[in-house]
Structures are given as structure tokens and as C-alpha cells.
Image (tube, rainbow, N blue to C red; front, side, top):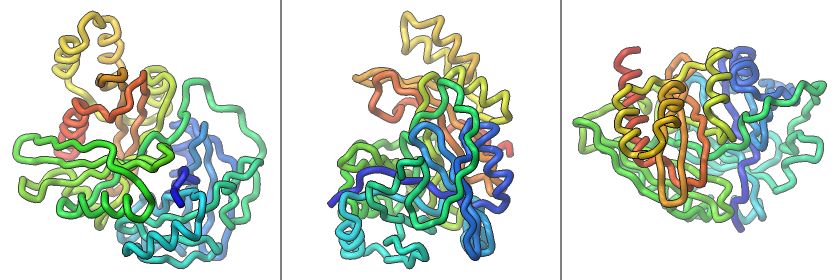
Length: 340
């Protein structure tokens, strides 16, 4: 009775054409199939093991009005769908109706979790989620070094609910606490708890502002998003520097990193002056833990409310989340917020 994997992540978008174009043209996803329902239409996008669904239509206007463009469903496969759904409801999850016959519960804010059997990933690459998917003729394969899988999902919640949500994912879905981090920047502070499924294939980084400190970017996110929501999706790549270069050429805007960061990085990573020079040129962040190195970079939000954004991450043995880079990310988002 446990969650096994992420079947898909569904983005509700005001302009589906523009949203799909960003993923396809800028991030290298492939458009696999279309689905048209009574009050909405969807596009299935794939790259590596990552499946994204982009949906628009009058049936999602309430969500868009409250939250703007953003993640509305993180669908998860389970070894026993019925048992997982019943357990989630038993510990307080709100059961949601599903027009497609799949059990669904509310996760956080306006985000749902549709629960699907492991066979939800059909042999033809489509989703067996109750929608009628129409395949799109095969497109050229994604360039080497692109996105391989969804590494983790960052979720922003109110500061006084962080522990509550971590406990909820433990009790409802069998997740365990993997790590914690507290970062203070000036008068602001961010607290975080990473929770992970027993399978190791579903990871949520729960982040929250410290309510005892000054309000900052996470408070601003909660206000713009109309409450808790997905702050960013982290995509695992094989080789981040060329992937970032291609993405920039295709129009992706990344957060900037000051030169002082790389001056300090050269001191931390002794004997790696040449690699630090390459990282500085690409503006890629680097960190190291007991298992290896971690390289990562964050995009600006492409959406009007400036909420959801994306991360490219490369793991060279590292199993963590870039403790030293959490501060760099926070500072980068804060600079971007204050100058936007």
C-alpha cells in the first residue's frame, strides 16, 4: 500500500498554445498526444521519463482565477490504488470527484493527486488515465543531454503548516522525511523539509517562510498564487552546461548569479579552477555533499503571475539538494522579485 511513481504532472494554462510552445521549443519536450473533453482540452508532452499534461478550457477557469497558470494535479501511481486512497482520506485528505473514474484527493492548496495503477503508463507511451488520447505523428527525438526525469517538486506552503504537510504525506502516502534545511537571509528566513516515497521515485521539497521573520519572496508567492502551490519543477539532465546553452538559445530566461558566488566557489572547490570558469560562464550553481557534486540552475517564471518556474539539475553522485545553493537560489529569486 504505497505510492510508486509520478504518472504525470498537469499544468492548467490560460493559453495552452503558448504554454506547450515553451515546453517544446524552449525545453525540448515532444508533443505526444491530444485529448478533447466537454469542457477542456489537453496535450501530453514527454521527454525521457517525464510526462507533462497541459490543459486549458472553461472547465478550469476557477483554478486559473484563483491561482493563475500552475500545476493543478500531481498524479501518482500506486501498488494498491483503493487502499492508498482510503488511507489518505482516513488521515484527513479531502476526496475529490473525478470525471474519469480515477480516485483523487486534495494535496495542498488547489493541487490534487489523482491515484492511478502502475499500468497508467501504457505500452504505446500514452496515459491510461481515462482520457481519450489521440496520438500525434512521431516527432524527431529529443537531443542528447536533455531532460531525463522529474528529480523533485518544490512546494510552497504557509510557514505554520510545514510540519503538518510533512506529516500528511507520511501518514497518507507513506513518505518519509529525507532532510531538513533552514536558511536565513537578512531579516527573512525559509524553512524546508524534503519528503520522499518509499520507492525513492517521488520527492517533494516542502518550503515555507518563517512566520517569525520578515515577509519575503515565499510570502509573495503565497499571495500571488492564492495559497500553497508548486513553486518549481526540477528536471534531471545528463549534462547541464550544454543543456542550459541550448535552452538559452531557445528563449529560456534563467536567474542570474553574481560573480562573487563563483569567487567563493573557487575557494570551496580547490583544484577545479577550469570547471568553475565554465560554471561561471554558464551561470550554473554547484554544490558538493558526501556522495558527490550537484549542478543546478533555475529559470525565471514564464507565467504572468510570476509563480511557477523550473530547475535544471545534474547529479554527479550527489543525493542532496544543494544546501549551499539553497541560499544562492533564495537570494537570486529575491533579487529578481525586487527588480521585476
